[in-house]
Image 1 (tube, rainbow, N blue to C red):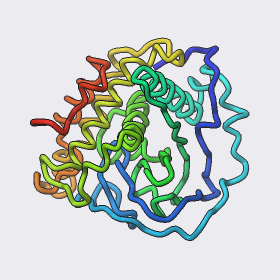
Image 2 (image 1 turned 45 degrees about the vertical axis):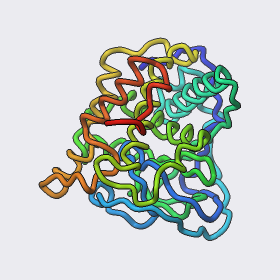
Image 3 (image 1 turned 90 degrees about the vertical axis):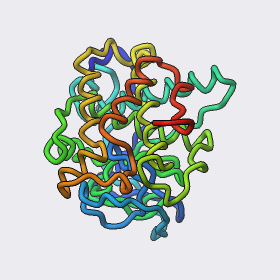
Amino acid sequence: MDFRDDAELDASQVEDARGGGGGGMPGGMIIGGGAVGVVVTIVALVFGLDLTGGSGSHPTGGQRQIGSGSNLAAKCRTGADADQSADCRIVGTVNSVQKYWSREFTDQGRRYSPAKTRLFSGATQTGCGHATSRVGPFYCPADHRVYLDLSFFDDLQHDFGAKGGPFAQAYVVGHEYGHHIQNLLGTMTRVKANAKGATGGSVRLELQADCYAGAWANHAVSTGFLTRLTRSDISDALDAAGAVGDDRIQKRAQGRVDPEGFTHGTAAQRQKWFSTGYQTGDPSRCDTFSGSI
């Protein structure tokens, strides 16, 4: 994964709340705990061990300001910066993902509404309630934000056995913005709060977000931010998708697989749908709500 050195980054699309806490409105639910991708109530979870999921809302304690000292705009100016800094790589990835979806929506005669990504550490307030990093990366439809604690990427390798790599991280970002697309298109309304199980609405929602991530990956270079994606990059994304399949997480955590507790799909399904998006580059091929998955 290599950024164009002269690509101009827009750091305003990423908020840095590390050390400051975030703001938000009451109500809503968190969607897609990052690559883990479960619909969860915002409660204190033991990350990677709570496999039951759920849904709901948690009132926030009111608006809080973004922490001072954020210097993303100062240090993340070009693609060259994105190649040298994890923070700037997130900025560049968010820029690329949103440019792709803005263009896609325009082609379909729709208007794309951007979503900010908020970086946090430990815990944060969101429009969907209070959340800790144990939830993993997630999207909150109530405030149209993706929330990301960068320590998750270490967890992805150490706790889930993924190889990691820059494009594994980009896959996570692409997946969360897939949830934003679902929110804009009204797809989330098709998922019942308790729709768990191997063929339930939660699994279908998460697999579609994986497919949307793949569709972006197909067009990532054409957004003007990346010079190329290699086979190794795509392999890293597929490896990350497989590492957080329901079956692998359950096997690792409890020694057995329970399809009734699935919330985001098996390793094979997650890899299949990312590949579908990547190979076709067509979001319309990401219909996980019709037929088998």
